[in-house]
Length: 221
Length: 281
Image (tube, rainbow over all chains, first blue to last red; front, top):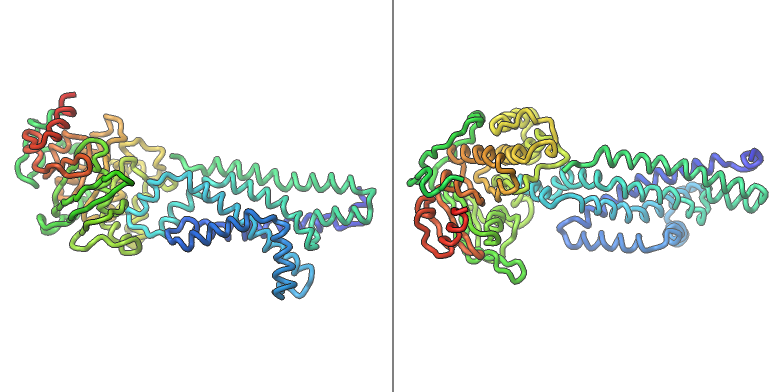
């Protein structure tokens, strides 16, 4: 096991996975909320755009999206996010992960919206709140509370899905595993076990935390 | 329920209604409605369908300032829909509705402004479940009327005291009884200083002993000159508090008149049948 740590940057790989998870979680939450608002809005064009977004990104393989963000946006369209190759790939990886998981965040939020009785929105409108105000004050706060568990599922899936970005050469955990496979095959079992433990340690707290939060913040009716 | 036909006779609209209002402090009274008698809500030829069902048939209804109009009728007669079209929670296909001389706007900021002037109390209370009682009452004044938090909270506490739930101000709706929640809902509407208040079966979801506490608040509002449209099955309340009773059946207004005339001398067979069924049990 110690040879593994001597020969390879194990902690660097784990740290990269954590960075990918946290950044993509933040961006997908923001994008997913915006898409959810579009899907809830009274404007048909926005609803159509929101629905299209979800259908496109939810039904496209993540590998393809991650590939496209680097190959398509960078190599073909020439959009460069950093002059440094590894940083460039990392940023495109975050973009790919974010837009993909935003579709699931959107649907988790919509399931949260469905837990809210229609009367809440009617009461909000009847005291004169505008659509935006009732969304901000009444609907979204209750939707987030009702969506904590499905949001936690999405977050856990995201943490594990970061392994897909090995395909564009970001040095995270799956990249480490493939490196070990190539250069030190005798360490393969060790790196597999270590990676599995790492992901369990990363994701179990997410599940525990969201489970507890959803109980604590549950809206009593 | 007392027999309404003989309980508290009331001939002239707007006359004081004899009512015990113990437990309902008179503080924080509703602003006096200026110029009583002029039309405030005018519905003309309003029609609405739910699919094949014609739920509102050519409704003509005028509610005057300071008037208490109580809408009664069998289930499915369109009473609630009528009430909900007045602030456009339900759309309608033809006809017109004017409030205070202005036609109901389409969706958007204009409609939001109009709704701020029209109070609405629902059968299922619909208090904002994630906000405290005080926040429920201050939300509209702060966000819509742009009052300061302090001013809104001061007024909210007065109104909560008025409806007798000021001690529950920091609790959440689910911690209150149904009657208390409905009184908070009334305070939430009052906080917007509405020109007219709509009540959509406000006591139908309440235990019998809680109905009185809500009706007491409503009766005191009526006495103070609040313009009210009330959909209810409480015939005793209708008889006591109404200036005018509107009887609906199958989406149409079949007859209207003072409570005394309506309850003692209904004109249509449908109304006679309805009253016969509900007043004998």
